[in-house]
Each structure stands twice: as C-alpha cells, then as structure tokens.
Image (cartoon, rainbow, N blue to C red; front, side, top):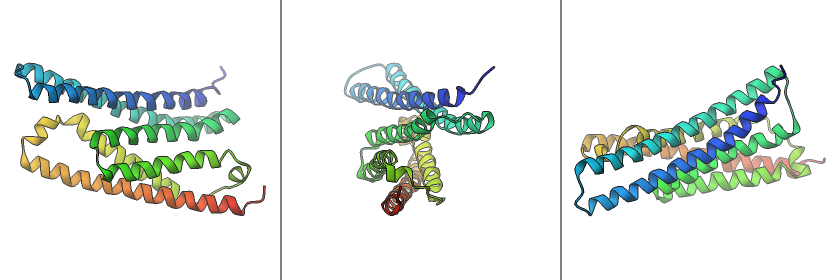
Length: 221
C-alpha cells in the first residue's frame, strides 16, 4: 500500500486544527459574555456553574486542537523521511501550516488576555511569519539556507508559551482561581514567566527574520 500521501494529509490536518483552535477560543469568549451577563442577573447558581463549565470545555477544545496540530508537525516530517515522501506541495504547505497554527493561537491569546504585553509579541511573531512566508516564495528567498539553530529555539519558546498560557484556562475555572489569593499570586507569577517566554520568542523571531533577509539580499540565484 502506498502511504506517501500521509505526510501531506497530516500537514492539511494541521491547518484544520489551527482553525479549530481559534474557533474554540471564540466559543470560549462567547461563553464569557454569558458568564458576565449572569453576574448582573438573578440566575440560579447551577446555571452560572454550567456556563463556567461550558467555557472551560471550549478552552480544553482549543488546547487539544493546538496540541494535535503541534503533533502533526512532528509526525509529517518523520513520515516524510520514513516513507521518502517528499513533494513540492508538501514543501510549500508545511511552513504555511506551521505559521497558521501558531498565528491563530497567538491571535486567540491576544483576544483572551487583552493586554499590550501579549499584543506586541504576538503581532511581531505573526508579522514576521507572514513576511518570511512571502520572502521564501521569491527567488532570493528560495536560495537561502539558514543553518542557525535560533529558529528552533524560537519555535520552542513559542510552543511553550502558547501551551503554558492556554493550559490554566483549560484546567482551572477562572472563578476558582479568583477565590484564593495564594492561587491568584501563583497564577500571576506563572503568567509573567510565560509572557516573558513569548517576548523571547518574538525577539528571536525578529532576529532570525532579519538574518534571513540579509542572507537573501546577499544571495545570487
């Protein structure tokens, strides 16, 4: 049986998981509107608890979709090497799927936290990824092979920050966190560390993009 189509199928699945992750965030934010409305109305405690549970389920959905997308990133590359299944379509789609997954997750986090501390690094990473996707379609961009490991560190910080920021939303109901000062302080400390990792990823994104752009300018295809 010819299974060489599997890597490209997984890459396409990563695009779907990216959209599902963002959709989960949108639904969770919609549930937050219902929760806020319940605070201004005289509704049973069970109903409000149900709304909180629904929101948490949507955050879990978004997190699992992101994790599934990240898993396909590993599997499609591994299978492509294992099956010797390399194609021009896969080479073209793989970086787009990667950037779509990260970009939509970052956009979702910006919508959740609504702070410039997330807006700026998220915008920097997304803008850099869009620019790099375009640059690699040009002759000069195609001629560049960047041997730096900084891009891998950038991806590692991105993934850790995104998963770390989404995980508490999926695991701990926000109402429960607000009820305990100690938990709130720990959550704030963790958020600071994770946002710091996001800023590091943004700095590495800009730096590696600048290095790649200089290398492309020097290339002679």
